[in-house]
Image: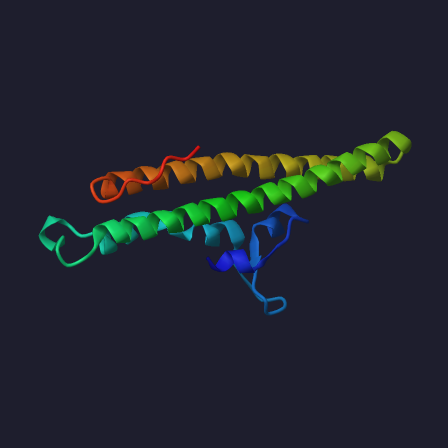
Amino acid sequence: MAASSGVLNCEDFSLFQYYIIDVPSFVLQEVLKVMRTIDDRIVHALNTTVPTASFSGKVDATQTCKELYESLMEAHLSRDKAIKSCIKETSAAVSQLCVERAKNGDDLSITKQLRKEQTKLKLMQSELNVEEVVNDQSLKVFKERCRIHYTPPKVK
């Protein structure tokens, strides 16, 4: 997946969602949007790669479904890893700001920055819920179309 080779910026929530290629300052699109492309196009991918009964002899549906499933799982894992990485980074920033606020309780700039980081953390955590919905929808469509051709391994 293209997005996994880019640099993920967790600094600003809006920038958190951008994907930056190796070419400096060349922003392609929002990273999660790019990373969710396979999920957005699952129906099209299934319709164009998994044969109907009349064309079943021309394409190896088992292999096609297996490859699509592996691509889905790779995409889901890379997005989950990216989101959790930013959550971890932002959580550390929140913890550090809490320590600073405890030392300098009158400093309004620290309090303001802490609130900003806490809001960003909540938004990133909500992305995990969005991710769960996207993943569930993609897997549901996959199972409906590939159930007779390929059974994915059981996930722990």
